[in-house]
Image 1 (spheres, one colour):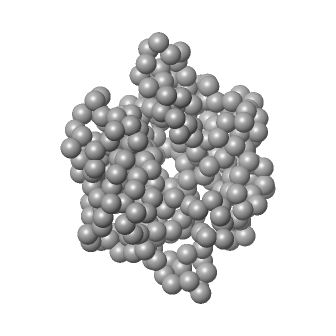
Image 2 (cartoon, rainbow over the protein chains, first blue to last red; image 1 turned 45 degrees about the vertical axis):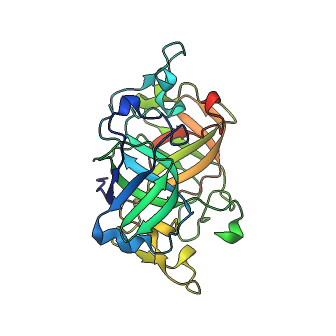
Length: 134
Length: 134
């Protein structure tokens, strides 16, 4: 179960501690730059689409099972699977973003809180609630 | 970027070819059985909660970049990043499920279309649309 990066985040965000906790909490516009060999896998993705990006949170800890939600020590500790903490046994980030523009293997997106240099491991469309439209 | 299973799917579904394409398209009740060492990470997850499970689709192909959406050859091929095909460079499955019950390290869930024996790599809560409730 070995992941390989399919691309990388380019973002003005560089410090995980000061980045927004979620993409809809004030993240700046950012880019996803895919490795050239994977550009073909974007065929069918268009401007305005909503996507789910999966990233590898390479600065996270993997040995943490309990955290204060959102790092707020006034809240009681919970298991990491009840939170979106980056610290978890497999530190995969899940980000719902909107495509602003596409140029070859580069996607400009809204609502991405991952920091600059974060490896991207998968890109998926957000599914329509109507199965007939999938 | 090495994933380790945190648990496994137990399901009456055994054949990927005949399993529903998405969990809300007729999946039977199924279970997620976590390794005992990770049970603590579930603290705070409750019955009725909506979760996102990430799985490792161990029977998928990793060398496929274009597919007919939903395996329907009447539809033109698209890039795998525009589809939810299991075949993709990093075959991570994303499943939105509802918790029916919890017993220790075992979660019974609705709307899981992954087949029996699929490794589970992460469990995340579905976020409230209201950031103040996260």
